[in-house]
Length: 172
Image (cartoon, rainbow, N blue to C red; front, side, top):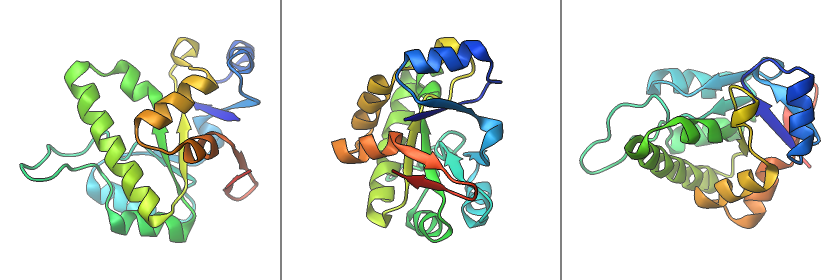
């Protein structure tokens, strides 16, 4: 199991990652990760073959409409992700640092994105995406988080068990 963090990795973070049950901890700089943004930027991220992971596409979306939720993804983006072999990432750090009302909105958007990814059969990754070692969470905690956002037990386990090849990310 591999965890992804946003901070610079030193000996303390590597040791903490091993304590939490991960085989290795990767920095954001080691993988081509794009963080979710507006719908136009998300479209560009999902169209770019060099991108490995689009992390939390729901974070900087517009306000929700009355009759539907704007989650930063749709079926077109999911099909592009499948074609270009791009994984959709769900980081726990955004949930951890959000206030109560924003947290529930983000969780709802994540649940919607999981359903969209499941329909298109694109890759999903769950990680702590921590700013420092105090925000890192264990592998079992991230499995529970994956279940909360709507993944099946098999999908949740697969979302944590992935390897990075020289060119792309693949699942074990």
